[in-house]
Image (cartoon, rainbow, N blue to C red):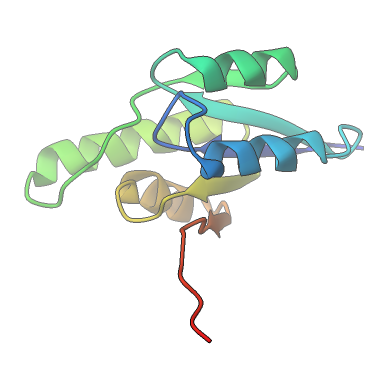
Length: 127
């Protein structure tokens, strides 16, 4: 039976906030018989080392903010992400911090790959 390959996408390679810690807990809870985690990274850091220690595949590429104000560069980034998604046979994208990374969202749409948005922001609850 084919495992589902999940690409985790986050802007930082460091474990310095709650978002990467929550992502690590989620990866730890995966049944590796059914799910194969991968992480998209452009650098090195404590998060990458933690992921490697958990046998998470690291896929190298450009993780940076993109802007519609530079359409040719934006198109190039979408095309590059699309090719990576196809090359690594990604089935699902788990994305932290939506908004800065619309290139991978559009690439996933073109590749017909679902995207799960993980919102992990502090909030104040009033009584």
